[in-house]
Image (cartoon, rainbow, N blue to C red; front, side, top):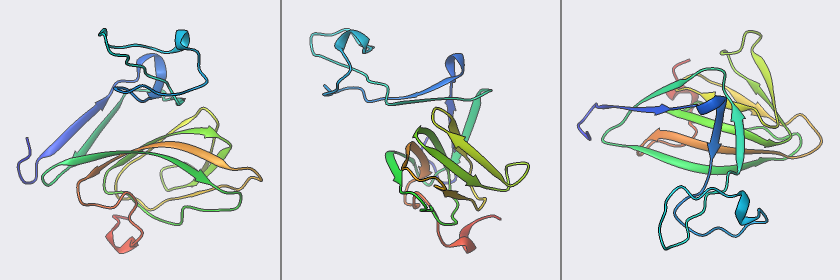
Length: 166
């Protein structure tokens, strides 16, 4: 672990076809009643987990990220205003996202027709290297919950397309 050129493998187990992103290890203020929250750890201190977004994947997912010497994981809530775009970019690792609100029109060579619209409750997985763009083509905000799994020191989104694979 942590050696130069090592490959970190992160397996995401998609139990019952659902991807859950949550906050654990601290008390969270929320409008969700305590009876609806999971408490994954039994202890005297309060530990609460509140799912903030869910999205389905049709199959298990395996993610491999080359890191020198390590891989970072960043969680973000991304709001895209009506008519706005992420701009063309790529990633040096992976992005796993869930559409919480609205729709995301995703332009990428990974889609059969080069475009796919993701709606509320769907999840998106973007891999490394390929150029793509997300657009909000609707009249209301698009909100995404995003986990970036990127080699330490690399940007979350690479906008210098010369540094992308294709």
